[in-house]
Length: 308
Length: 306
Image (cartoon, rainbow over all chains, first blue to last red; front, side):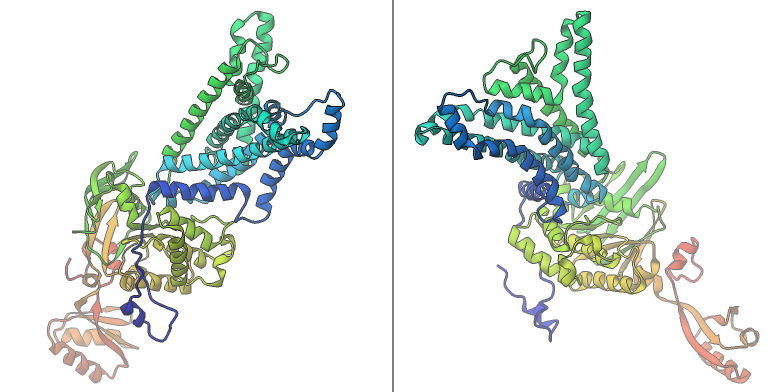
């Protein structure tokens, strides 16, 4: 295929290294490959691979902190085993309560890394180079969204796996324990997937509106804090004023609706201590899915309109 | 088949007419696209790439419509923007390889082509360093490399010598010339610097306020004109007086004397007059047209094809 071209080679006699310009006659892949390539580059970027060492600090520290409680429980599983065996009541970290308990760290991860993905190319004006190649604007947005979703999924998977291993090791019969543990751990996978897409879509959609990282990060934090706080405030007023509809506003919240949706996968009733109102986990799931659709549409809209 | 063709192509930004009924037909070669800042050069390139769609009219590249067949066009076109477009925190090799893959080149091919192209544009050991630490000249080379890496048939360069010092400028122009001649890739160079266009291009498109001013091979702009320029160190005024007295149409232009070249006999007449007056002669040469005349006024005074 890449046969040497004698004409080109001899045109610059005297320098054996310079073969002259050679045309490329090999394979050219299409849009799917371009998207995959951007996905790979993007995923490397999130974790700071191929970047200066400082770029690796934030993602790995946050991922480490998020996994830490589960890893500690795993490390002390032998001690815990004795306590469980001796009939003591031990409160262990569980698959369904892990994300709600430590979701702030996952949120910080999004605040730190989502702007990195979409602001960098805008700030350095790299987008025209993409859009003049076989890459569409929507494809660009989807590849970026896919990479952040995957990164979040991995981030959530580590503690889930650690909990699983820990729980199995606490039982005397390992094989039997694996069989018992699987059905309990399995709902964590779709739940983690939902959380990943949900957080990735929100944080990327908001980040994409500014080329400056700082503004994007502030934008995500402001959006999530406000949209979490406003329904809660209206609900508390509504309780005294007798507005029965006010608890429905919780469906608009980004983090609470994801937390509520997690319980749907584990088939649990919502804990009244952390969830106010009469909403069910199924309603929260529908709200979370709707939020994903809306935020993905906002992201796509932004990239359709972005000047290149 | 013409490489680039446009028919009454127009692009309005509100009341601003960036392109106004432009009709073009470009054949392969190294094509200079000149015009003042804001004449519509960048807009034309962006329409050809399908980055912006025209308000009216149509454009085609290699026979493909710029609106309907954008994707097919992009496979065979390389684009180097006018502005900075490089992320500072990656190396040139990594960045250009990535761009090659976005263009559809498989992993190994992308790596090989990147190494080859970076060598062609003259980046060696520094290609692994972060782009943020590069000089402007090196950055321009990386920009050219990313436009070339997927082996396009047409290369669109927007102000490729922007911000370069004279040495860097000459190197970049030399690279462009090599790309056009050795690599066999048609190059369109948009520039507001006529000197550069004159140095490398074979064909010239001059646009002004969205209109086509002139389109012709560069030689027709710079060919000999029927004017003889005589330069003397002193006594230009005496030379004019003597020449006019002998019946020639001559006028003084600074230290030079311009004479209408009516016949071959004029050379002898000039020689004799200069010898008679004993003037220190510097040079006698036929005037050439200059590109600047194109923009100086609508009807060039010395142009032959006006």
